Amino acid sequence: MIKIKLKEVMEKMGKSILDVARETGLNRNAVSSLYHGKVDGIKFPTLEALCLSYKLQIADLIEHIEEKKIGDNEKIYKQEGEMALFTTWPPAMAFKNPDSNFFSSNYGEYYGYFKGGYMLAYFKEKYFKNLAHEVFEKYSDPVQYRKLFNEYLIGAQEIKNLYFSHDKQDIITLDKHSLLEFLSQVSEAYRKFWKIAIVVDSFDTGYDQMEIKKIASK
Image (tube, rainbow, N blue to C red; front, side, top):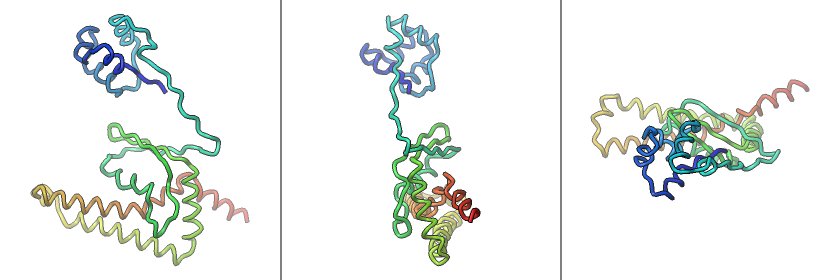
């Protein structure tokens, strides 16, 4: 991983973003983005302006950090897509804590990154497989499956009822207390729903396809 160290350099020199922009001729927004680490890279002319203005070496501004290597038994699975942080929070919490009445496994440690309405999430694949195996073994039983699916339907209906209980005009006219109460109800309904629904993701790494192949080969 490449780290841009402009913030550390500026703090040592006692320079503000405005100082650096004025003294180097760089755009203030560009300096601010570099300072806060909100960039995917840095251009050569920008490096040159900083080095010449403050007698720096490239190594003063850029550092290569060796990322932790993952063992062969810890393959990483990536999910990505357009998603807002507000609507992602309930399922993100459920990844770690599915409903313990139905599941004993979870998705383990994971990391999520959001930028401009887009999300990247990284998981250890083995946890997906463990949970998928548990679901396959337990919920192949029709009785157990019906219990799980009924709970899913109850959660989905609760969310639907909440939204249909208010139209757009109602929401706009709610006072602060009422709006916060409604949002709290919605958040809790989503939390309960996703603690059941999140199990569907466990098959994303292909466990179901492996089982289908085993059955077909018999």
